[in-house]
Length: 277
Image (cartoon, rainbow, N blue to C red; front, side, top):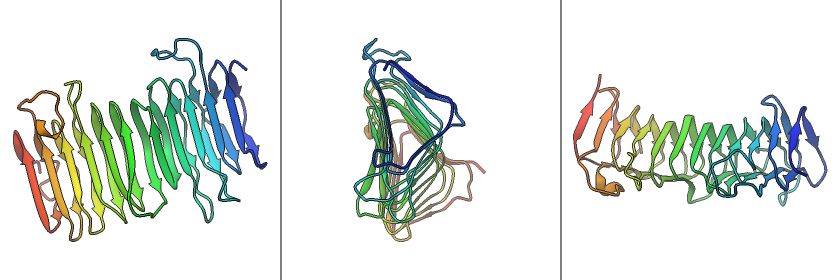
């Protein structure tokens, strides 16, 4: 098939869940459409046209996606496209077992989704990532790793039962707020292309763990940082990942009332540290 366009909801209760693939075309659905797969949802959009190019072929653009649970060997959501991956809310959380969500762009394009609720979220080959919110249900020891090439944005809250390691190769990180109940937080905004790499983040809460925030350029803190008895390291400096050394690097807050609760705090900025009331 050369392309799929959906005009209504799809509900699948069989063992295969919802599975749609194209040989050379897009998978498109109205923003109000819901894809429900009791055993998971798998969408794969391929293209043989302009492979590796910045075009609109091999794109996934769908609405809400939900799964339920029945058997631990099934479930989850996989959206794999040669081009962009665009979706609404993704709910992969069942009544007892939650499954992972995987977003893949073969050609290194963008991924944009609504609210994500799942055991895990995996990004593969994504250039620019954005979400309304992220809820990770897993409480396993260790970090969830989120990597994007040019930007990582969560407009609302990122909540997780484990730690989080978020990195960009050359671009900004912006997150409304972060709450981790079983692990440390690491934010790394590097600047491989020398185009600038800033971090903007709201309130941060982790349980007795380390918070590390490193930006090649500027860092803006929009809330309190609470590690209980952990440590906090904030660095805005070219040594944090700038391709070429420069004099750009500041730490500032949007209120002088914000506090950092930790055993040890280390702040380092090339241009200084400021607070705005």
